Image 1 (cartoon, rainbow, N blue to C red):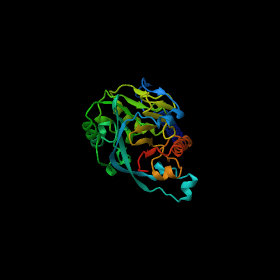
Image 2: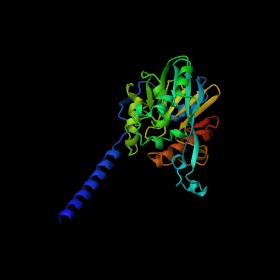
Image 3: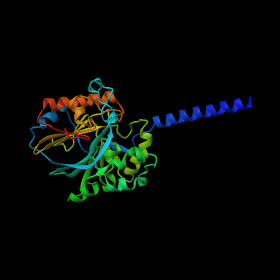
Length: 311
């Protein structure tokens, strides 16, 4: 009886520990860093965005490939989607790229959209709370940095005025160590507070990357006229994460849609298949993807740049 009693206690302890762990991970937010409504940017509309495509107010946009990398296809494309199944896609290792974009506004100065990859983050991951067990999952050994964020910042002649983030996944914010702590960081509404079990593994890293920085500035509308002049729009595109944001930039060469991870790949965009298990809400991810595809179909002069592949 005594032995059986100990076995029951041990089983109960295991069940309790599992339940507590599940409860803890389910409550993990993307970051514990504070967020506040953005003091800049005006609530706008899809109609205003479309009208802006004829706008003479433009900004320069430079595309910088920061790194070559790879990821499992199951994260990049929903392999359970019927279109993916008909194509017989399998979970192969897919080459991808990591980008940052330098935006230069004639009046308001220089900004980055996403951050690329800093040498400091890759060379010293422990400094940013990356646990040793997680390093292999981050696949640093598969990453080839082509232009690190330190170089990007050094090549910009004026101080950065802000960082526009498509979302807070590590491959979009790992350039932050190379950027001055005083530079404000802008994210989509609800990005910081979203709860998802995988954030339990990455929240401490994002917290470390944001440490010492001002409160995150959150866009507050589905369409935001960033500079209130029709040159740049933030488009709330939730699903990959709650605050995922695409950016429409009117450049001298024509309008460019930076779709972020609303679609990681050209195949996903061209076949209208949403991202895979890297997303927190696949149905909403699909809605956002179709929304942007419709925008481009209706306005074919828009050039599209996806999160991790050339279109």
